Image 1 (cartoon, rainbow, N blue to C red):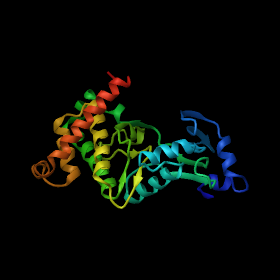
Image 2 (image 1 turned 120 degrees about the vertical axis):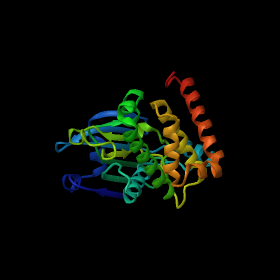
Image 3 (image 1 turned 180 degrees about the horizontal axis):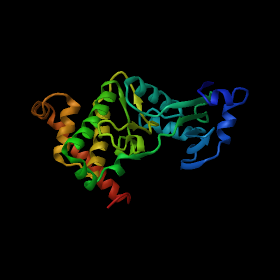
Image 4 (image 1 turned 45 degrees about the vertical axis):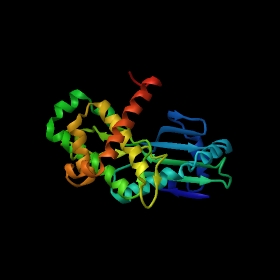
Amino acid sequence: MKLFLAEPFATKWQHLDPFKEVFMLSGETFRDMGDRCTSRFEFDGKAYFVKTHTGVGWIEILKNFICLRRPILGAENEYQAIVSLSELGVQTMTVKAFGSNGWNPANRKSFLITEAIEPTQALDEYCNSESLANMGPFQKRSLIRRLAKISRTIHENGVNHRDYYLCHFLISVSDQHSKDPIAKKPISLIDLHRAQIRKRTPRRWRHKDLSALYYSANRAGFDQRDILCFVREYKQISLRETLKNDSGFWKSIVIEAKSLHHKGIRKGYHS
């Protein structure tokens, strides 16, 4: 069994079974995938999110192995990803409790409790053609450079997200930061359930992350100049040199982003 408890849970659950307590928590369900459930709840006057896992089953495990993918067996993967991002200085969720119990990987129970990051707005909602125009060129470029820096930091340190869309970046909309320039507003990267951690991020997984980000940025209203600004900041060398040495990589990202767009239309996510 693995267990980590921070306050207030360390004190409140000191003489209790944390696994029983977690599965008895009640709140607003945000996502229920059967074996995995995400809910928002309040505890001692503060808001938190809890993800509970009850095991993916042997069929799902075998399916992943057949596809040469490492199966995600519970909450520990996201817990480790949060720890890694925090060490890298990338703003993300704050873990308040984590537990994993059971030797059988198919039905292992686990949980992760994080502080609610509120009030915030997902960047795919915060950004649209009108809001980007109102930001002005300087503020918009500041936001792009921040996204590029986050992307560069995680990729250069062996982390890839696998669901790297603007909806997984939360920007603060609190009164405290209402007058702050975009460069100062807190931005947190969330939903690290599928994140991968290695010594080095393979090119194909950088490609997957950046294609997803390009797709969602394009839908939000970022233009070609914005994309070139991102590329320059991400690579930290001149744009001329980047496009000369690695133009095939960036062209393939545009192609993959278009594929994601058509996939979204087929599935009815957007028109």
